[in-house]
Length: 522
Image 1 (cartoon, helix red, strand yellow):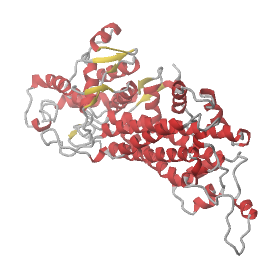
Image 2 (cartoon, rainbow, N blue to C red; image 1 turned 180 degrees about the vertical axis):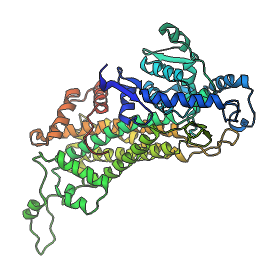
Image 3 (tube, one colour; image 1 turned 90 degrees about the vertical axis):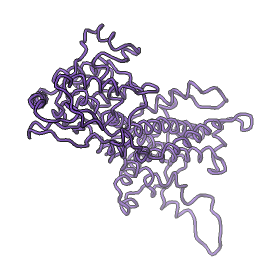
Image 4 (cartoon, rainbow, N blue to C red; image 1 turned 180 degrees about the horizontal axis):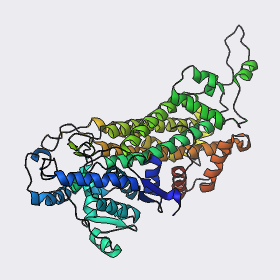
């Protein structure tokens, strides 16, 4: 297999990009580093040796508020099976398959670190499921994100033991039937293995890793659309000048401004402030000049608005990278120090807080896009372009008027979704879990915001392409803007006569979801 689709897991070096590859590329596969299995075997051996000597939470005790119940030696396996079956109770629509694959890859990397006490055979079973694309059906609702994503991860564990439902080759089927057909044996859990499978942040972290890639794509598209917008209004070059942004040197702001300068270096339509100054004179009378001295904020302040979002994404990516390679079990089988550490590494607040911040940033990005769309569609605002970018006969034809309603309503929904799920803690589990993260729901709400953002930016792209056609200045635009326009026109022709655009819009949406990511420091 191509090494570019081969992901080697050692518990320490899994990246956001590799999670995205493994979850989204149909031919990607995971391999386990041979060195990692040493720790896995030693942790299992240490657990087995101590099992009948010490009280170990979740291994020979009950769970949560029932932890004071000591389990008999011959019931420790039944305890793990009961844990899996009792927690595989999620409800609602199934999560997307690539979210589930991402969670499985993250969970496997956590187990490979060698602090969970699981057997090599469990590692192999989970690896087989990933590589054969046997994808457990996980309902949407159920996680509070503190003892990890218990309910969602329990559905993965359930499939590993041959119960529940899976998606295989696009069809929902019984797990037992698929395993039988593929000659994959049902897995028989050992002590602690049920807890090791479900006790952690792998669901929220896997989704968060995928969201980071989408956020990079949306930020890239937003910056490119901002560059094209500046060209369409023949904007001034000093708003993105290096000198201006060196005087307020926030990292994200400087990166966005530098990226705009790079994108627009080949433009022939930006205006020089110096030349503008020489075009008009100041005299003794108050008088009006025919041009605006500076652009509206959605055009002039792109680095100042998008920069903070880039900084948020950078921080979120760092937190997700850390979580991908962390031990999120409880208890931790610390075989190196011959002890079991009981704690709360399963608590999802880092991911919950990070994806909530990212979500808020992407809502602002959506608002910026909607305002630029409004600028170009509103003749009384831009005072130059035709109403609703109508290229034929205003009054008889309506141009992009209907699309603006979609941008407005979708942006409004994003604003409602902006409220952080992170602060929606409700105690549960007999008040044992008295403060929770809601991390998986935070990630799922962020995913909805991302889906909406793609729609709003797609509408902005359609609007700006209409403006390019109206001006007839494609050849004077920067290379980036010319490419953007050409790519858009390959999936959606110019709108002159009113027509049904349903198929066109789906094509544009597919394009923006696959649009290139700029090579900048995220």
